[in-house]
Image 1 (cartoon, rainbow, N blue to C red):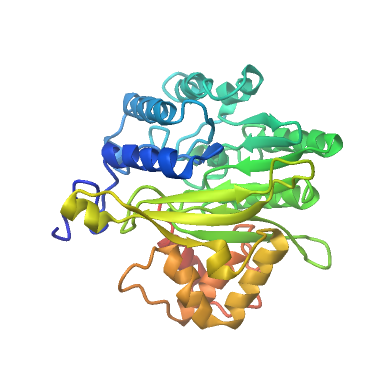
Image 2 (image 1 turned 90 degrees about the vertical axis):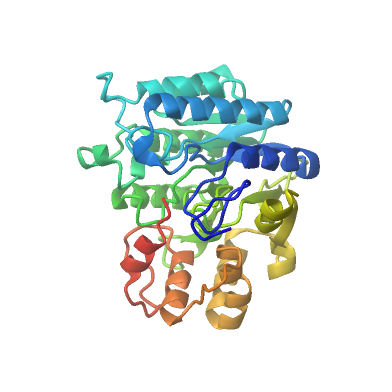
Length: 393
């Protein structure tokens, strides 16, 4: 392929998203080889030709991809989240108080409420129609909460009118976590935009950080997307010891946009048994051999790495993720052979200089956006420029 051409199955060289056939192939691979018990779907379904899209286009994309998901996983529980690309225009998520037809997001919220109802019980649907978030009881001792993180998106210009808690989502989250804590129920949180990124507005990020700090014993996992890259972000207590309280998995994308191999993330959790913690034990990243697919029309998915083999970790909890960060801080060679290689799927011509190395360390412990104090012990140059340059969406 030439550098600006898209292959039949997709291209790492051209600024393109994947064709529908690649999405279908990924679902086929997952259904036949992975056979998951549950699917977390963290949003961003439409492609990146954002200014060519209409509301009708977005609804069609959501319907088609959901129908295919149901076709390949008729008996699997699926828990979706909205991404910033689901709206039209992109990033536009007015608060629920905006009800004028040509401005409000009722067209999107009502539609996904209907589409997602195949996977969710009736009691979870009202908040989806209200503002695109929900909670569902997965089992007696586990609850799953899906947030609409576009209410922290700094490109959602509606938030510049009111970014306090425009969809009442954080207040609702506190109530959900308070109930779970009292009932002895653990909670997994799903979302799209990682809340420590600079594209999550500071006020929302700070308040969310405090909520996680308060309910650190209740929240046992956070699973995000948005960046298309493979990385993580640890959160720390505001108490004097600053112990790690939680962390966010930020998973790589199925799309090739931009210059990436299609990827699938698989987690093994501790459950379900009498003493389940529901915390992650292992993560795996699987990649499509795109060159082989385009050259020979053979679709082969390969295990890029798993956390146990790559990092010698058997328990992915805040303390062990903090220790992994410390290992990267002390051993740059190990960082380059593992984390940096995996972050962009071993892209050629992607060296990580001193500035890159320091900023990646900073990113690992930045669970609260736009806070210069978090990385005060790491010598940083042009930190904001780094985060903006790596803001894929």
